[in-house]
Image (tube, rainbow, N blue to C red; front, side):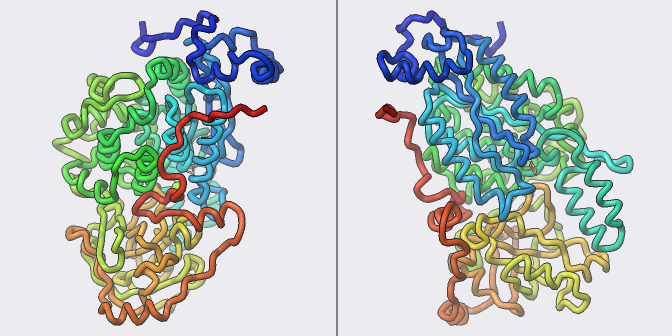
Length: 587
Ligand code: FES
Ligand code: MG
């Protein structure tokens, strides 16, 4: 029998199974039971669905407004096959679909709203376990946060990456190509017509971004944490094995319910340490820092920003994927996917961490083959040496920390001193970025601020603004940029991100003036504003916080309660868990 078939429930139909959570709805007698069953019967289910078998929610973030997730309704059908096969009762329900590309002002503003919505839907309904269907960046952490705060058994199935983009005979990666084409457009190397043609070549199938951007990173994090089946992160969205994996997950969730294998038993401190190390090995997105901190906060797992620096000092980057490297997720899949990486990391990982399979990480990846050593490099001859991953910087400019993705930065800028040019918004910078007489050169340090969680609001991916046209035309490829916002996982450049506290919260970033000097010293993990303390105090006394961007609705609630980047940008009142019990019935 398959490794996933152990512990199948006996679905006897007797009331002996009424210990199940869902049975307090469906096995109820009298008026309450009639209410719970009769309305469900309008969907034409046969009566065995109420016999005490596990009821499995399938939380789908399907939406035509979230193009990366648009195939999840078909993935859900495969999950349902598996649940039925294993003797469960599957019920699909929608959770807020967050697409990176369309949502204003940024999908990040809504991650916590998805987490809150999905948490309440799981808790309020007659579910015994849940399958989480995600894809685009925020949907994966949002659903993991939700499941963590409820605590019912949960398994994730991400939607998988798009096929490689193909343009003029070369592979092009989601997002990463856009940044490059914009530079080419600004520098006069590409026409608008060529760009319009190329954009169709980049997104040619269902799936999320196929670079090692945030979606591929978070799918990999879900797998590294043990929350999705081995290989689940990398099957392309249109590969039949994506659907096979989904069906298998539908079977596995039944085992998890039978064994009460909850998120807290899987996502332990050891699992987070594994995920952080895997993120370094895959050259993953800086957004993983914020999302993993937020998920850990729901579980009460002690995790700190500095863990992301110290834990990876001996972890080399093995995976040669864009934006840091050359290849794309389809190549990663064919090379062996995440299990090959985790096997290669070997003793660097906690081998005993439990996963959704009921087995340990080490058991899952013990025999994982690698088929392409140019895509997944060996640990003794890595793509990038240990210590070149995400670094956490501190100093008088970022007392609570800032991060930089070294593998996406220019080596010559990792130690740099430059004169500052400050902008209070990305828009203010864009208004002058093409000016021929902009007072800027390749040594300038560009500060873009008021882009943090409260400030923008929602902490958008605005940190890696394109270089001034004047520099691009001279062939300058990179310069130091500093921001309290985030950077797209598909982007590259010497960009200091997540500066905390943010400018809108009165962080020192708000006190910087054009003409100041800033020193960045990544090897020493230092970020220093060369302004004396007494001068900074004078500036602080003269500073007034910007007006609140919105005074009602979700955005008001968000800006009132959002935490800073160094703790994961969750809302203060959402940290922790409420469990799955709701004591009172509805009528
Ligand atoms: Fe959805 Fe990149 S925009 S995954
Ligand atoms: Mg993104």
